[in-house]
Every structure is written in structure tokens, then in C-alpha cells.
Amino acid sequence: MDEPLEMDWQALRLSRCNQFKGAPRLVCGPELRTRQTAELFGSAPELVDALRDCDFGRWGGERIGDLQKAEPEALQHWLGDPASAPHGGESLVQLGERVGAWLTALQSTSGHIVAITHPFVIRAALTQVLQGVSSSLIDVEPLAAVELRFHGRWRLRLPGTDPEDLL
Image (cartoon, rainbow, N blue to C red; front, side, top):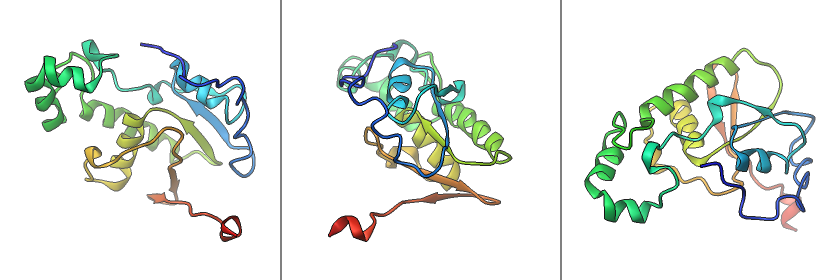
């Protein structure tokens, strides 16, 4: 599935380009919705295959509620065993390996990178950085900002609100 965003992204194009200091390198997954979202932050994002959404195989495009009714045992198996892929697509372990390899490659890259991707990919990145935290414990809302920094090791930084903005 390569569906578009469900919002008028064109009216909001470049609306978030000043959200980050400096001129970060803008990268995104290859799907239409990630490319459209990236254009909120800047033009001409670099497509990075490692940021593509998890391959859900034959479950692609299905709602979780529908899967709970149609294939409850397969769904529970997939949720309980990160190495399983009963849908014929990518397991969560495989997703984590893909994202982990991308993070490793970034360790020798200088400068800031803004990556636009999917909740499953963000969870996989956080699981790699936090080493051992289950991705099922992490919720990622649309347009959420997660900041990862590498200085000899990965660190999760949760930016706060400028106290001036609260006044």
C-alpha cells in the first residue's frame, strides 16, 4: 500500500521547515505518505530504503481490529514472538536489524539528520538505542519528534518546551 496522507499536506508544505536549527539533512522512507510528510519540513528529501515501513505481507493495509477477528491466533503469535512473520512479510526482528544497520551507518556521519518514517520504524530505532525495551511499549503519534544523538553511543533526547513559550 502506498496511500497518501489523509490531510491537505500541500497547503502545509514547508510549514515546519524552521522547526529544527540549521539546515539538517532531510531523509524519509520511500512511501508516498512519508514523502508528503517530509515536504512539511523541507523540499527534495533524500529517499532512504532503510526507513521504509515494516513489510506486513498479506496483512498490508488491514486494520488491527479486522486481523483480531480474522486471524486472532496468527496475530497473537506475531505480537508474542518478534522473530515470527505469519503474514509472510518482515518479522520485527528483521525490521530491527534493518533499522539497526542504518543507525550503525549513521555513527560516522556528521551533521543533523531529520528522518521522516513510520511508527514501526521509529519503535525499532528506539528499541535499538534503548537496548532491550520492547517496541510494544512505545507509542508514536503522527508528527511526533524523537531526537536521537550519537556521541560514542546512542542517546535518546526528549526535548522540552522553552519556558518562554509557556508565558
